[in-house]
Amino acid sequence: MPTTFPGQYHYAVGRRKSATAQVRVYLAGDGTVLVNDKPIVAYFGEGNQRLIEEALAPLKATGNDARYNVTVLTQGGGVHGQAGAIRLGIARALDKSNPDLHSTLKSANLLTRDPREKERKKPGLRRARKRPQYTKR
Image (cartoon, rainbow, N blue to C red; front, side, top):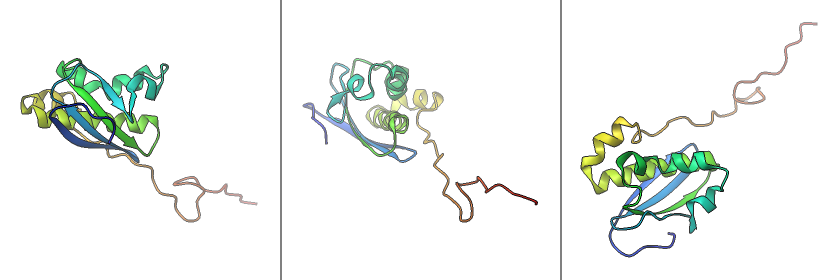
């Protein structure tokens, strides 16, 4: 697990596409978010502000931006899938830490796992659904 902060924490796992995120939300903190031992801005990059906002959406929706420290270990998938996995993991950990936040997180649709996955390739096709070109003559 990444660098830890002292104190009690709540643990949750988030998944999106083929990415997984193991999240620890520490009950006392100053709003520091570490992803794979790097600050979240350094991990996703300066230009990916939208991904950072998506990943931190549960903290913003509940008004706990600067109240908790968060450490994340994420692997698999791409940056968009990892951001979605972090988002679900943080939401689940916040729900565990304070059940009063459940209705806020639920109404913001942050506790629902996105079930969309890549469709498997079928035999005789080029991809999942793309067929070879049909020639009549």
